[in-house]
Amino acid sequence: MTIAAFMAEALLHPQHGYYRTADPFGRDGDFITAPDISQVFGELIGLWFVEMWHFLGSPAEAGLVELGPGRGTLMTDALRAAKVAPEFLEAISVHLVETSPVLRKTQKSQLSDYSPTWHDSVATLPDMPNFIIANEFFDALPIHQFRYTDAGWREVLVGISKDGLELMISPRETPHVSLIDDVITRNAKIGDVTEICPAAISLFDILASGVTENGGAALVIDYGSEFKEPKATLQGLHGHQAKNFLDSPGEVDISAHLDFSALKRAVPPGVCCWGPITQREFLLSMGIEVRASRLAEFATDKEKARIDSACNRLIGPSQMGTLFKVLALTSGDDMPPSCPPGFMK
Ligand SMILES: C[S@@+](CC[C@H](N)C(=O)[O-])C[C@H]1O[C@@H](n2cnc3c(N)ncnc32)[C@H](O)[C@@H]1O
Image (cartoon, rainbow, N blue to C red; front, side, top):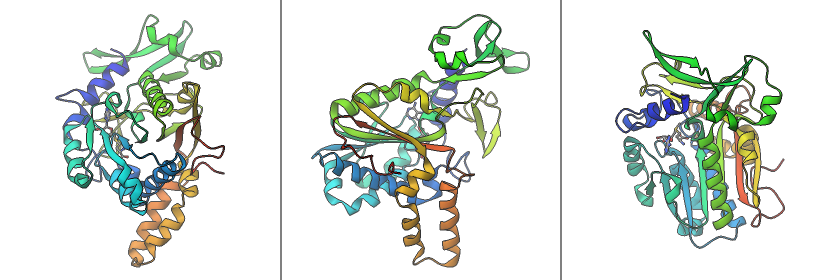
Protein backbone atom coordinates (compact mmCIF):
# COMPACT_ATOMS: atom_id res chain seq x y z
CA MET A 1 0.00 0.00 0.00
CA THR A 2 1.06 3.62 -0.37
CA ILE A 3 2.49 5.38 2.68
CA ALA A 4 -0.55 7.68 2.51
CA ALA A 5 -2.94 4.72 2.83
CA PHE A 6 -0.85 3.28 5.67
CA MET A 7 -0.76 6.62 7.49
CA ALA A 8 -4.52 7.12 7.15
CA GLU A 9 -5.17 3.66 8.65
CA ALA A 10 -2.54 3.94 11.39
CA LEU A 11 -3.74 7.37 12.53
CA LEU A 12 -7.48 7.35 11.87
CA HIS A 13 -8.76 3.75 11.76
CA PRO A 14 -12.07 3.92 13.70
CA GLN A 15 -11.05 1.18 16.18
CA HIS A 16 -7.27 1.06 16.16
CA GLY A 17 -6.15 4.47 14.86
CA TYR A 18 -3.65 6.45 16.91
CA TYR A 19 -5.90 9.52 17.03
CA ARG A 20 -9.03 7.44 17.82
CA THR A 21 -7.94 5.52 20.88
CA ALA A 22 -5.67 7.62 23.09
CA ASP A 23 -4.68 11.06 24.33
CA PRO A 24 -1.08 11.37 23.10
CA PHE A 25 -0.31 14.77 24.67
CA GLY A 26 1.90 15.90 27.53
CA ARG A 27 4.76 14.48 29.55
CA ASP A 28 3.16 11.05 29.88
CA GLY A 29 2.18 10.97 26.22
CA ASP A 30 4.19 11.05 23.00
CA PHE A 31 4.69 14.75 22.32
CA ILE A 32 4.22 18.26 23.69
CA THR A 33 2.85 20.98 21.42
CA ALA A 34 3.27 24.77 21.70
CA PRO A 35 0.01 25.42 23.66
CA ASP A 36 1.18 22.95 26.32
CA ILE A 37 4.54 24.71 26.59
CA SER A 38 3.10 28.13 27.43
CA GLN A 39 -0.32 29.76 27.74
CA VAL A 40 1.20 32.75 25.90
CA PHE A 41 1.06 30.86 22.59
CA GLY A 42 -2.73 30.48 22.55
CA GLU A 43 -3.23 33.94 24.04
CA LEU A 44 -1.32 35.63 21.20
CA ILE A 45 -3.30 33.64 18.66
CA GLY A 46 -6.52 34.79 20.36
CA LEU A 47 -5.34 38.39 20.02
CA TRP A 48 -4.44 37.78 16.35
CA PHE A 49 -8.03 36.74 15.71
CA VAL A 50 -9.48 39.72 17.59
CA GLU A 51 -7.31 42.08 15.52
CA MET A 52 -8.16 40.34 12.26
CA TRP A 53 -11.87 40.43 13.10
CA HIS A 54 -11.60 44.22 13.62
CA PHE A 55 -9.49 44.55 10.45
CA LEU A 56 -12.19 42.79 8.44
CA GLY A 57 -14.99 45.08 9.62
CA SER A 58 -16.11 43.28 12.83
CA PRO A 59 -18.64 40.89 11.20
CA ALA A 60 -21.70 40.44 13.45
CA GLU A 61 -21.57 36.65 13.13
CA ALA A 62 -18.33 34.74 12.70
CA GLY A 63 -16.86 31.31 13.43
CA LEU A 64 -13.76 30.81 15.57
CA VAL A 65 -12.50 27.49 14.26
CA GLU A 66 -9.69 25.16 15.29
CA LEU A 67 -8.59 22.21 13.17
CA GLY A 68 -7.34 19.36 15.40
CA PRO A 69 -7.69 21.09 18.79
CA GLY A 70 -5.97 18.33 20.80
CA ARG A 71 -6.86 18.88 24.45
CA GLY A 72 -8.46 22.27 23.72
CA THR A 73 -5.63 24.16 25.42
CA LEU A 74 -4.92 26.59 22.57
CA MET A 75 -8.61 27.47 22.16
CA THR A 76 -9.06 27.93 25.94
CA ASP A 77 -6.08 30.33 26.09
CA ALA A 78 -7.19 32.16 22.93
CA LEU A 79 -10.72 32.70 24.27
CA ARG A 80 -9.40 33.91 27.64
CA ALA A 81 -7.20 36.51 25.88
CA ALA A 82 -10.12 37.51 23.64
CA LYS A 83 -12.02 38.70 26.72
CA VAL A 84 -10.29 42.06 26.08
CA ALA A 85 -12.82 42.41 23.24
CA PRO A 86 -16.27 41.37 24.57
CA GLU A 87 -17.85 42.42 21.24
CA PHE A 88 -15.69 39.78 19.47
CA LEU A 89 -16.80 37.07 21.91
CA GLU A 90 -20.38 38.11 21.35
CA ALA A 91 -20.02 37.73 17.58
CA ILE A 92 -18.29 34.37 17.42
CA SER A 93 -19.36 30.77 17.77
CA VAL A 94 -16.71 28.10 18.41
CA HIS A 95 -16.22 25.23 15.93
CA LEU A 96 -13.82 22.33 16.39
CA VAL A 97 -12.78 19.94 13.62
CA GLU A 98 -11.81 16.77 15.44
CA THR A 99 -12.11 13.07 14.65
CA SER A 100 -10.92 11.64 17.98
CA PRO A 101 -13.77 10.73 20.38
CA VAL A 102 -11.26 10.65 23.26
CA LEU A 103 -10.03 14.18 22.56
CA ARG A 104 -13.56 15.47 21.88
CA LYS A 105 -14.44 14.50 25.45
CA THR A 106 -11.50 16.48 26.88
CA GLN A 107 -12.32 19.45 24.63
CA LYS A 108 -15.95 19.33 25.81
CA SER A 109 -14.99 19.67 29.46
CA GLN A 110 -12.36 22.38 28.74
CA LEU A 111 -14.60 24.53 26.56
CA SER A 112 -18.07 23.94 28.04
CA ASP A 113 -18.58 27.71 28.64
CA TYR A 114 -18.48 28.31 24.87
CA SER A 115 -20.78 25.46 23.70
CA PRO A 116 -18.61 24.44 20.74
CA THR A 117 -19.89 22.60 17.68
CA TRP A 118 -17.81 19.61 16.54
CA HIS A 119 -17.17 18.71 12.91
CA ASP A 120 -15.67 15.60 11.34
CA SER A 121 -14.20 17.71 8.56
CA VAL A 122 -14.07 21.28 7.27
CA ALA A 123 -16.89 20.45 4.81
CA THR A 124 -19.56 21.23 7.42
CA LEU A 125 -18.14 24.54 8.74
CA PRO A 126 -20.78 27.31 8.69
CA ASP A 127 -21.06 29.64 5.68
CA MET A 128 -19.90 32.80 7.41
CA PRO A 129 -16.58 34.54 7.99
CA ASN A 130 -14.49 31.92 9.75
CA PHE A 131 -11.32 32.68 11.71
CA ILE A 132 -9.38 29.44 11.53
CA ILE A 133 -6.30 28.16 13.36
CA ALA A 134 -4.51 24.94 12.46
CA ASN A 135 -1.54 24.30 14.75
CA GLU A 136 0.32 21.03 14.10
CA PHE A 137 -2.66 19.72 12.13
CA PHE A 138 -1.35 19.58 8.56
CA ASP A 139 1.69 17.48 9.58
CA ALA A 140 -0.59 14.55 10.45
CA LEU A 141 -2.18 14.42 6.98
CA PRO A 142 -1.19 11.41 4.82
CA ILE A 143 1.78 11.89 2.48
CA HIS A 144 3.13 10.01 -0.52
CA GLN A 145 6.89 9.50 -0.67
CA PHE A 146 9.02 8.93 -3.80
CA ARG A 147 12.65 8.09 -4.55
CA TYR A 148 14.38 9.28 -7.72
CA THR A 149 15.80 6.32 -9.64
CA ASP A 150 17.41 5.94 -13.06
CA ALA A 151 13.89 5.17 -14.32
CA GLY A 152 12.48 8.39 -12.80
CA TRP A 153 10.39 8.84 -9.63
CA ARG A 154 9.24 5.62 -8.00
CA GLU A 155 6.82 5.59 -5.06
CA VAL A 156 7.94 4.22 -1.69
CA LEU A 157 5.37 1.67 -0.56
CA VAL A 158 4.65 -0.24 2.64
CA GLY A 159 4.93 -3.99 2.09
CA ILE A 160 5.12 -7.07 4.25
CA SER A 161 7.96 -9.58 4.52
CA LYS A 162 8.57 -12.50 6.89
CA ASP A 163 10.05 -9.98 9.37
CA GLY A 164 7.01 -7.71 9.34
CA LEU A 165 6.25 -4.40 7.64
CA GLU A 166 8.94 -2.84 5.50
CA LEU A 167 9.39 -0.07 2.96
CA MET A 168 9.85 -1.05 -0.68
CA ILE A 169 10.16 0.80 -3.95
CA SER A 170 7.35 0.39 -6.47
CA PRO A 171 8.67 -1.40 -9.58
CA ARG A 172 6.37 0.71 -11.79
CA GLU A 173 5.31 4.34 -11.94
CA THR A 174 2.27 4.98 -9.71
CA PRO A 175 -0.44 7.61 -10.47
CA HIS A 176 0.69 10.11 -7.83
CA VAL A 177 4.04 10.62 -9.60
CA SER A 178 2.18 13.02 -11.89
CA LEU A 179 1.61 15.36 -8.90
CA ILE A 180 5.33 15.96 -8.31
CA ASP A 181 6.19 19.53 -9.26
CA ASP A 182 8.33 19.95 -12.41
CA VAL A 183 10.80 22.17 -10.54
CA ILE A 184 11.56 19.29 -8.17
CA THR A 185 12.04 16.82 -11.04
CA ARG A 186 14.31 19.24 -12.96
CA ASN A 187 16.72 19.40 -10.00
CA ALA A 188 16.45 15.76 -8.89
CA LYS A 189 19.51 13.50 -8.47
CA ILE A 190 19.47 9.71 -8.16
CA GLY A 191 18.63 8.79 -4.57
CA ASP A 192 16.73 12.02 -3.78
CA VAL A 193 13.48 11.61 -1.90
CA THR A 194 10.46 13.84 -2.25
CA GLU A 195 7.12 13.87 -0.47
CA ILE A 196 3.75 15.23 -1.55
CA CYS A 197 0.62 15.67 0.52
CA PRO A 198 -2.46 15.94 -1.73
CA ALA A 199 -4.67 16.00 1.39
CA ALA A 200 -2.91 19.18 2.61
CA ILE A 201 -3.30 20.85 -0.77
CA SER A 202 -7.00 20.07 -1.03
CA LEU A 203 -7.64 21.15 2.58
CA PHE A 204 -5.76 24.40 1.96
CA ASP A 205 -7.80 24.93 -1.19
CA ILE A 206 -11.05 24.47 0.79
CA LEU A 207 -9.86 26.98 3.42
CA ALA A 208 -8.88 29.45 0.69
CA SER A 209 -12.25 29.10 -1.06
CA GLY A 210 -14.05 29.66 2.26
CA VAL A 211 -12.04 32.83 2.84
CA THR A 212 -12.82 34.10 -0.70
CA GLU A 213 -16.54 33.32 -0.47
CA ASN A 214 -17.28 34.29 3.13
CA GLY A 215 -14.35 36.45 4.31
CA GLY A 216 -12.48 35.64 7.49
CA ALA A 217 -8.88 34.44 7.76
CA ALA A 218 -6.84 31.31 8.41
CA LEU A 219 -3.57 30.79 10.26
CA VAL A 220 -1.51 27.65 9.62
CA ILE A 221 1.35 26.89 12.03
CA ASP A 222 3.47 23.80 11.57
CA TYR A 223 6.99 22.50 11.27
CA GLY A 224 8.42 22.44 7.81
CA SER A 225 10.21 24.61 5.34
CA GLU A 226 9.39 27.07 2.62
CA PHE A 227 11.49 25.08 0.15
CA LYS A 228 11.45 21.41 0.98
CA GLU A 229 14.83 19.69 0.75
CA PRO A 230 15.05 16.46 -1.28
CA LYS A 231 14.96 14.17 1.74
CA ALA A 232 12.51 12.07 3.73
CA THR A 233 10.86 13.86 6.66
CA LEU A 234 8.28 11.26 7.61
CA GLN A 235 8.81 10.31 11.24
CA GLY A 236 7.39 8.21 14.04
CA LEU A 237 7.27 9.37 17.65
CA HIS A 238 6.48 7.42 20.78
CA GLY A 239 7.08 8.50 24.38
CA HIS A 240 8.96 11.61 23.13
CA GLN A 241 11.46 9.38 21.26
CA ALA A 242 11.89 8.85 17.52
CA LYS A 243 10.50 5.46 16.56
CA ASN A 244 10.21 3.54 13.28
CA PHE A 245 6.75 4.53 12.05
CA LEU A 246 6.11 1.00 10.75
CA ASP A 247 6.39 -0.43 14.26
CA SER A 248 3.17 -0.91 16.24
CA PRO A 249 0.76 0.88 13.88
CA GLY A 250 -1.86 2.75 15.91
CA GLU A 251 0.50 3.24 18.86
CA VAL A 252 3.03 5.56 17.23
CA ASP A 253 2.47 9.16 16.12
CA ILE A 254 3.31 9.61 12.43
CA SER A 255 3.90 13.02 10.86
CA ALA A 256 5.90 14.75 8.13
CA HIS A 257 7.23 18.25 7.58
CA LEU A 258 4.75 20.53 5.89
CA ASP A 259 5.79 21.75 2.44
CA PHE A 260 4.77 25.41 2.63
CA SER A 261 5.87 26.11 -0.96
CA ALA A 262 3.41 23.46 -2.21
CA LEU A 263 0.61 25.15 -0.23
CA LYS A 264 1.55 28.54 -1.67
CA ARG A 265 1.53 27.17 -5.22
CA ALA A 266 -2.06 26.00 -4.60
CA VAL A 267 -3.42 29.42 -3.57
CA PRO A 268 -6.28 30.36 -5.94
CA PRO A 269 -6.64 33.88 -7.38
CA GLY A 270 -8.40 36.35 -5.11
CA VAL A 271 -6.76 35.02 -1.94
CA CYS A 272 -3.76 36.62 -0.23
CA CYS A 273 -1.24 34.29 1.30
CA TRP A 274 1.12 35.83 3.87
CA GLY A 275 4.42 34.21 4.83
CA PRO A 276 5.52 31.70 5.71
CA ILE A 277 7.50 33.47 8.39
CA THR A 278 9.16 31.74 11.29
CA GLN A 279 7.24 31.13 14.52
CA ARG A 280 9.95 33.24 16.18
CA GLU A 281 9.23 36.25 13.91
CA PHE A 282 5.47 35.84 14.34
CA LEU A 283 5.47 35.54 18.14
CA LEU A 284 8.00 38.37 18.60
CA SER A 285 5.93 40.61 16.35
CA MET A 286 2.76 39.66 18.29
CA GLY A 287 4.46 40.74 21.55
CA ILE A 288 5.54 37.50 23.24
CA GLU A 289 8.24 39.29 25.24
CA VAL A 290 5.84 41.91 26.63
CA ARG A 291 3.26 39.23 27.53
CA ALA A 292 5.92 37.06 29.20
CA SER A 293 7.18 39.96 31.28
CA ARG A 294 3.61 40.78 32.39
CA LEU A 295 3.21 37.17 33.50
CA ALA A 296 6.52 37.34 35.35
CA GLU A 297 5.55 40.50 37.27
CA PHE A 298 3.90 38.63 40.13
CA ALA A 299 5.76 35.34 39.72
CA THR A 300 8.21 33.71 42.11
CA ASP A 301 11.82 33.27 40.92
CA LYS A 302 11.09 29.65 40.13
CA GLU A 303 8.01 30.57 38.10
CA LYS A 304 9.95 33.34 36.31
CA ALA A 305 12.58 30.82 35.23
CA ARG A 306 9.81 28.54 33.96
CA ILE A 307 8.15 31.35 31.96
CA ASP A 308 11.54 32.31 30.45
CA SER A 309 12.41 28.79 29.49
CA ALA A 310 8.95 28.15 27.95
CA CYS A 311 9.14 31.31 25.82
CA ASN A 312 12.67 30.44 24.79
CA ARG A 313 11.45 27.04 23.70
CA LEU A 314 8.78 28.66 21.51
CA ILE A 315 11.05 31.25 19.86
CA GLY A 316 14.62 29.94 20.35
CA PRO A 317 16.25 29.51 16.91
CA SER A 318 17.60 26.09 17.85
CA GLN A 319 14.29 25.05 19.42
CA MET A 320 10.85 25.65 17.83
CA GLY A 321 11.57 29.22 16.71
CA THR A 322 12.76 28.61 13.16
CA LEU A 323 11.66 25.03 12.46
CA PHE A 324 8.01 26.09 12.89
CA LYS A 325 6.54 28.43 10.29
CA VAL A 326 3.41 30.55 10.19
CA LEU A 327 1.30 31.24 7.11
CA ALA A 328 -1.90 33.29 6.88
CA LEU A 329 -4.72 33.39 4.35
CA THR A 330 -6.99 36.38 3.87
CA SER A 331 -9.36 37.36 1.13
CA GLY A 332 -7.69 39.59 -1.48
CA ASP A 333 -10.69 41.95 -1.40
CA ASP A 334 -10.92 42.40 2.34
CA MET A 335 -7.37 43.07 3.37
CA PRO A 336 -6.12 46.64 3.58
CA PRO A 337 -2.77 47.17 1.83
CA SER A 338 -0.85 46.53 5.07
CA CYS A 339 0.06 43.05 6.39
CA PRO A 340 -1.97 41.07 8.90
CA PRO A 341 -0.76 41.43 12.51
CA GLY A 342 2.34 39.39 13.24
CA PHE A 343 3.54 39.54 9.62
CA MET A 344 4.95 43.06 9.75
CA LYS A 345 8.73 43.25 9.58
C1 LIG B 1 -0.67 16.96 16.80
S1 LIG B 1 -2.28 17.20 17.35
C2 LIG B 1 -2.32 18.99 17.45
C3 LIG B 1 -3.17 19.46 18.58
C4 LIG B 1 -3.33 20.96 18.81
N1 LIG B 1 -3.60 21.69 17.61
C5 LIG B 1 -2.17 21.55 19.56
O1 LIG B 1 -1.57 22.48 19.05
O2 LIG B 1 -1.87 21.09 20.66
C6 LIG B 1 -3.31 16.80 15.99
C7 LIG B 1 -4.80 16.99 16.24
O3 LIG B 1 -5.52 16.80 15.02
C8 LIG B 1 -6.51 15.79 15.18
N2 LIG B 1 -6.58 15.11 13.88
C9 LIG B 1 -5.59 14.43 13.26
N3 LIG B 1 -5.97 14.06 12.01
C10 LIG B 1 -7.21 14.55 11.85
C11 LIG B 1 -8.15 14.53 10.75
N4 LIG B 1 -7.86 13.94 9.60
N5 LIG B 1 -9.34 15.15 10.92
C12 LIG B 1 -9.64 15.79 12.08
N6 LIG B 1 -8.80 15.84 13.15
C13 LIG B 1 -7.61 15.22 13.03
C14 LIG B 1 -6.01 14.94 16.32
O4 LIG B 1 -7.00 14.17 16.95
C15 LIG B 1 -5.43 16.03 17.22
O5 LIG B 1 -6.44 16.69 17.93
